[in-house]
Length: 201
Image 1 (tube, rainbow, N blue to C red):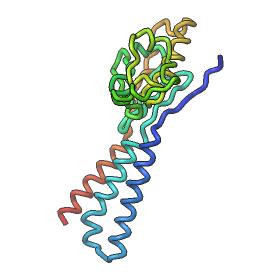
Image 2 (cartoon, rainbow, N blue to C red; image 1 turned 90 degrees about the vertical axis):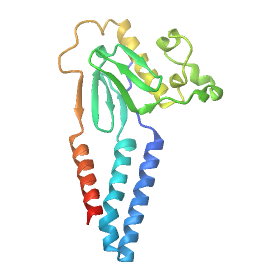
Image 3 (cartoon, rainbow, N blue to C red; image 1 turned 60 degrees about the vertical axis):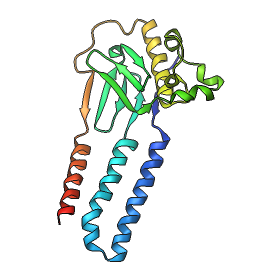
């Protein structure tokens, strides 16, 4: 069966980011229209920082299931996880990949609350073999949750690779790696400094 890449990004994060950006822009325009330069310099940077934080926390994160690896993009760093490095997949609090180097949680794939079990549909129980063998299906495993949809896609391909014997052998050096988001960190840090300086003016 031909592999189909998949990307998971919660729609709520995009809506929240756009909403916060519009609020920040509206407030900045309000300062300009009112001719309140002092207020703009004092509070404008905080509005920009709030919008930037929302973008980093809720727009940027994603889980990408690719043929050669799983990419987990969190607010401040991205993990590149090759398939042989995945030892276990969990969904208790969020999609979590256990690897020889670290336990990697996906910001973009949080688990659903415990009350989700009361609203399950027929599709929610059609999870992968490993999820069924683990026992009862957690709320975070349901296909209607961000964590469950991503975990199911990862588990199914991981199981296929395992059955084909493609997960055997040593892990190639450098394939499991974490890349910090330097530009995002610098941007947020600079906005924080400018915001504090604005209050001191």
